[in-house]
Amino acid sequence: MMSEEKDIEVRKEEATAPEGVETIRTSRTYVPRTDIYEDDKKILVVADMPGVSDKDVDIMLEKKTLTIKGSAQSQVVEGASLIYSEYGVGDFERSFVVSTEIDREKIEAHMKDGVLTVSLPKAAVALARKITVNKG
Amino acid sequence: MLRRIYHPSTWQELERMQREMNRLFNESLPGRGDFSPSYPAINLWSNEEQAVLTAELAGISPDDIDIRVVGDTITISGERKADEKLENMEIRRQERGFAKFTRTLQLPFHVEADSVSANFENGVLKVTLPRAEAEKPRKITVRKS
Image 1 (cartoon, chains in turn red, yellow):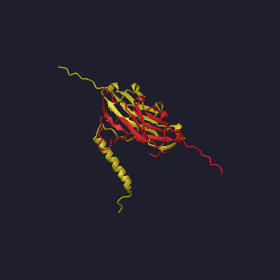
Image 2 (spheres, each protein chain N blue to C red; image 1 turned 90 degrees about the vertical axis):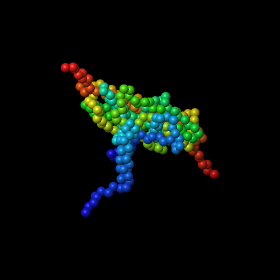
Image 3 (cartoon, chains in turn yellow, purple; image 1 turned 180 degrees about the horizontal axis):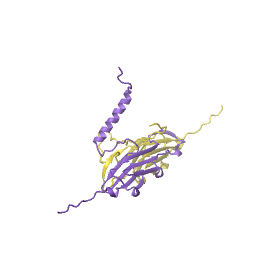
Image 4 (cartoon, rainbow over the protein chains, first blue to last red; image 1 turned 30 degrees about the vertical axis):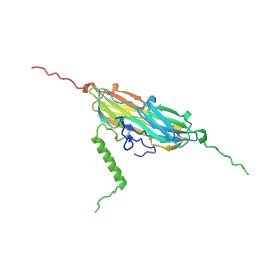
């Protein structure tokens, strides 16, 4: 299929626990597909987390590591059996290293139609300043 | 003598093999569900009364989803649009795709098209498809002669 736009990936990538680490929960964890945008004022992290409501998102910035987690609501249909399945349902988790200084007090996040947007405003020290060179 | 007119490159061949392997593995692991031929991936639930289709359509406005049911087929089409507000920002990473999509699926039975209902919550679409009255299984009583 020819298209100028990037096609939508179908496969959900499953998160793998580091070697030697066993997970406690039996449910699966997926890596959310994520876009990252940046301008001179902020960094935006946009992640697809279908089935996750705004109450079930957990965002943490520890030192330079940003971790986003979301628990997906069950999609099980009571009284019916799954007769055909192309995707699995589970939680989402992913971490990013943020190299820019972030103004921690002003981090904002919102969830809409299963898409999480985290806004990380750059700290004043990290903002680029225009320096005028004086004539000698 | 012409043996082969078209020689696929090694990479193409490897890619094809990988796809084939994925298909084989996923077919042998029912319910694992992480392979789909096209977007969106679909799960289908069913009992004697109805079928329920679910699909993950994160970032799509419900107004951009179109559902059509004819007989025993359902077609879901729509478009995932890019956020215009982000156009002026520099892209550091891009994994989410934006495109138009259409998918048609055959259901296990004919459905009552007038009573189909759909709901969209947190990016998950759920379509309830009641089985056509004429196709519902009937209990047949065996009478003593």
